[in-house]
Image 1 (tube, helix red, strand yellow):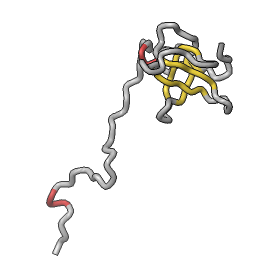
Image 2 (spheres, rainbow, N blue to C red; image 1 turned 90 degrees about the vertical axis):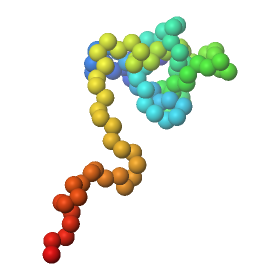
Image 3 (cartoon, rainbow, N blue to C red; image 1 turned 60 degrees about the vertical axis):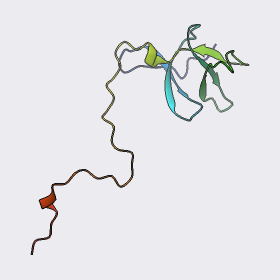
Length: 105
């Protein structure tokens, strides 16, 4: 059973969650308590960081020290709206009206 020191409350629904790091290095909120219906395998590594991986057909069982977790996004009753996404392409600029940038003679 995981310890209680890293449990926080969700900003939207006030449920107990833990922040974990995925295999790809992204942060993911998971429900704080183990859930047999969850599709994540969670474990605490040697640095105390909670790591999660998806249970796939190739690795569908829990391995040493892992517990089954549910992603919080699947159970949150009041999710916060996501901010509008900006362009990820470098050098991309907002549209400027044609006449506003011309040199005056």
